[in-house]
Image 1: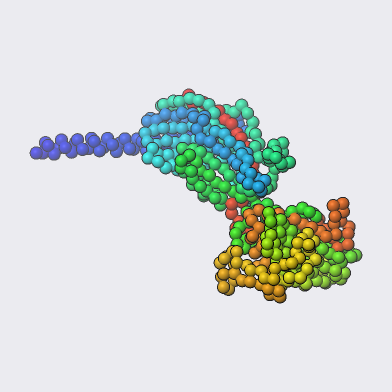
Image 2: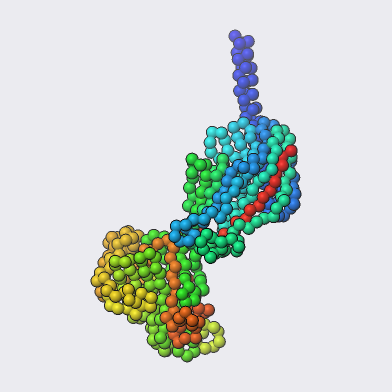
Length: 475
């Protein structure tokens, strides 16, 4: 009996002990390969980003697995969706990523796209070291590192890394045009969204990385093993210089409901020391399909201080709404240029608590003057539902003489215009040939504004994409 128990114990120890030893060996092997590929990552970066001509790294002894170069593994596609604001999309870049892979048992480790990844045959993947994808402050920097080469080695391996090409700028590229436009690949990015799609065996880890490093919309296509992140271009955001007559303030990624946290402009006259704002007529207008929107400002005051009237107009082809306030804003005096003399200025906050009245009369609009005739007797704000802070929560109707805040009016109509809005400046005393020096006209060089949207994520204003090819030979 004692002999039998001893034999059983020895057999169990041999069986389970051997499995434990194998597990330990596998774990050590994987850790060693992770370290080796992380070293390869740093050496490839030096060559890819032109900091070194050639590098080599000992990958160590692959006790249980094999190092292999796969130049066709993985695919990255960069697409500008809705670049023309008419639904068109354009592929900016599409090519393979390649990889250096270590396969051992049920575990795969790989260097791909400037990062190191780990996956298991049971499914799923994780990040060992982060890829070359940097999103900071509305700027996406994407140096695409493509691996070429060959070789497959078990046991001790050496990787030689070199490049026969220089880094190529994909975006911006002032010589590369968008289809059917006069626009080239230039910053800032205009219209639509920028989408990065990575097809890879490690697509779930790529998606995890995108989600952790951006505020973009991240999705997964399991059927095609692809991770996708979509970033929205912002257009005008924050402080901006005032556009000249007939040039737009570009609002991008405009959200639903009331999208504006702040929207204000400060306007200086062309002749600050003489006519000031006498005869001043200025507006912002937008046209989206059958929708028309305009905010116009007027003043005839030759003195400082003075008052400025504001008119808001909106139409969707059937409804026509007009709002008016004869003293919405003030002309004030300040020594804006530090010369010791005071100059007149208008600061118009379109998201202020200033009350404005619904008015079915005929306003002195600049762009849509004729269209504004026959305004509806009633304007009902119910399109945004509970997103509007009405006490009822269900919207409200206005008739002539009813008032609400400028913030409610501006936000309501801008929210109806869609995701991308061009608010075009129209200076009433300018025409196609005039460049200023007109009584009451705006001086664009000393005028400015600020716009802040409610949602500040998913934005890309500056895009820097480059192709960086490296050759990795495994021996």
